[in-house]
Image (tube, rainbow, N blue to C red):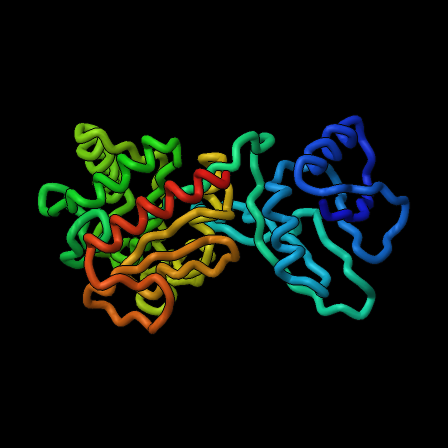
Length: 294
């Protein structure tokens, strides 16, 4: 088990509990000053320590600063930004520093369950372009079976969908919310449960105010996924994203991506499938395999 020095700046009554959480995944040795191979904590928070250790190993030889995603209001609009989590890893003085996002949880992670993330248009339903009226869509039966397989394995299912139609003024937030209520009801009637849905209404170049801005929520940024993991208490490592566009390759370590080549320009890469049959069968196989290791 990997040994890491732990420097806790603000000791509290929760310190012992925090150290015990870490001991499930690595060997923490408390120290009273900063030194090499040192995990620094300003205060106790709930994070996935196993995943954090994997990030340290993946970025060997670097100093790391970990960030949380924070929601805030600006002119009545909910926006997101990165903030300092109070957690960093010090490798050595001259090492390059890298900033990485991690998930902030409301309570301790007790199960290492991955999450199945689904793009919406083109994956769950036929993409007719700026889909927002439920009665006008066609649902893919094969994806219903994938969702049911995840439900059977107790793997949370989260939809993450860019909805630039809101930014372009083609439809409203309320119309998207109604669409998703009807979609969840339709799927549930067929035995498929969606745990959570996240949307991004932003488009910097083609949107109207107040949605014409950059956002960490818009794929391939990981904002919607960070919110999704926190909401369903799922873990990053082993999670799977299914999409049909290059933008569905989310920029965060530990998330696997499967794409279907179905008309959009997809750069060459791993796990790009030519048919829905192959995409769905490989997805179910992956989920079964990952649950065995969780």
